[in-house]
Image 1 (tube, helix red, strand yellow):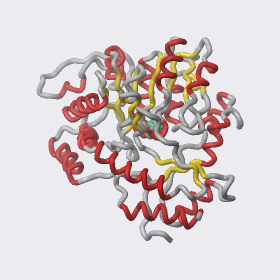
Image 2 (image 1 turned 30 degrees about the horizontal axis):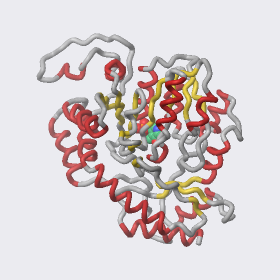
Image 3 (image 1 turned 90 degrees about the vertical axis):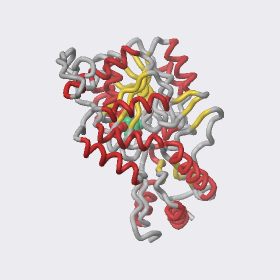
Length: 383
Ligand SMILES: *Cc1c(COP(=O)(O)O)cnc(C)c1O
């Protein structure tokens, strides 16, 4: 066994000041949505360069509310990638729409922007690209095809907090951008999410729909601003973020660049030390872009080894190394097959990647010894 203690995949880096910030909220007596959430929204929109930011209890909630804000109705089609987490497609379905998958580019693992136009029908209302692993999609092409066909764009930025494309942050290109602060993501609040937009109407809708459909700033009704009656304008959802979560998010966001630099070191080390193993390493970064380095994914080169991806995963666990699979092809899960008729072979590039892909630990929490252990385990298994 390469190490004594199991290396948990995606475990976040939490420091004493992060913990203190949460304790302070607990001691304050105001645990729910309040001043910390407001501050986190301020900080996040400044970081991203977006006019509006709305904190929620998950990115899934953000994706759902984005669909609601865009008035995605039963019958509407939304184009997305099959190499993503199920939340991306489920948000479309929750709003009554239909996810229409378009194959990925084998090198970038992002939706193939050149194939989007062919999937557009008279029912298509929006495109929902995912910046896979933190690598920006070809946003110039996606925005052009959206404009040409009069489609809205929602960016799934769950992996893409630090992502930039041609000098601008991911999430500011589309009509709406949705971020995740889930435990494994680059900035964590435990559970949590944020939507950014430059459209005031969408911002207002998302705020209201995220808190029962109650009129503006209903969370203030118990504050020292004085009691205010609210009105229910829509049967909304319960998607608000708590101050306990936001306090952690404020701290984590201050460290976003420090954590990024640590992940960049690990990324470069993996690139250098794994290149002679039967693994296809991540493609180089495109010029004038910033990759958020959320996932270090490799493809097992099945032409050069008889091992399968699942055998490699199990062998890593035996060495006490936790790894991830992002993702098995979404269209082949039972629900989407049954409901939408998707079949094996529909998206060959996504299926090729999904059968071979594996995510190695990349958290800023990793010590140099942890990285040595990951490399040593892979050398032992594949060398
Ligand atoms: C994590 C993730 C989500 C969902 O984020 P939550 O905050 O857990 O709801 C959505 N899309 C992608 C691509 C993700 O990785």
